[in-house]
Amino acid sequence: MIRFHGLLADTRMGEREHTMAAQLQARGHSAGAAVGADTIAKQARDENFPVGSFLLPRRLRPHVAAFYAFARSADDIADDPDATPTQKLERLDAFASALTHGSNDPALALAPALRLRESLRQTGVRDRHAHDLLSAFRQDATQTRHATMEALIDYCDRSAAPVGRYLLELHGEDPARLTIADPLCNALQIINHLQDCQDDFRRMNRVYLPTDWLQAAAIDPSALDQPSTSPALRRVLDQCLDTCDDLLRQASPFPARLRSRRLGAESAVILALAKRLVADLRAGDPLRHRIALSKATAARIALFAAAGFGLRQVAGRTA
Image (cartoon, rainbow, N blue to C red; front, top):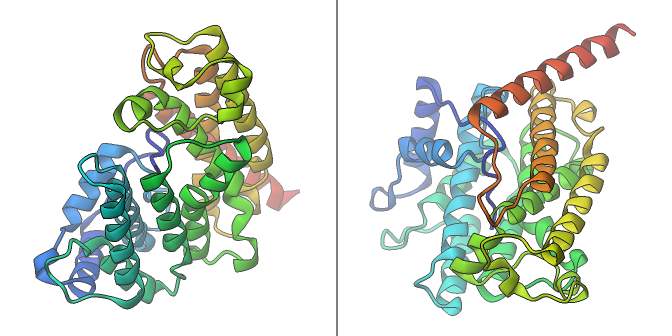
């Protein structure tokens, strides 16, 4: 499950971006499997996924949107309540095959994989990041629990970290240093797990809290199906938030180390939003209501974070 809801501004696709997205669509799949650029942009706006805000270079936004559409569509397969685990795995395998080898079969809903295949051909970005995501979605199709935080981080390394690695490679960052974004991406994923912990359990019987921590607190997943958080569950949530704090501390130097100042500003914004969400999750109860930032609050934090990043960059060049 890869849903970084509420963490970044929506995609803003102007005429040029729509033209480029249409080119990806025309080259990437047959008309029988067509999904328009407007659909991608609408999904991005509706879900607040980090899919290419105005801080990113305009020429790259359609490619980021193509990666998002692939991730969102594959995630939807893993989350399909009407499909069996075997059916989910077959559909995800078809996505993987289309990404690697292409497909001329109009009966299969492979448009996002074929569009991303074309995007990767144009940009030269490797397909390993998309395949890493598919590995996590296959796990979601068959596994509903994570024994330890280490096991959960392993899942995040495939469900969240590939997004950051893809963005770094797309922006021309050093291929040997793509994992520098992992702590931030993994923190975002755990934050989302905590935001949606009750909904994930009720809808899909999934628990993204370490089983050993639940057992140590003498509770089981049914604690998530309550109107409010018990003291024992609160301790487990706070342990997860402690992990997020550690990951965000590791991520703090990351934005300034990037070659791309635009991507650095984007990362600084996401880092600031993540820190605020961690604080709000500590103060609030995710079983009573979903903890999320209002648009006004997110905009204010984003503005100050982007401005602060810019000032630090200027100070660094003049020091």
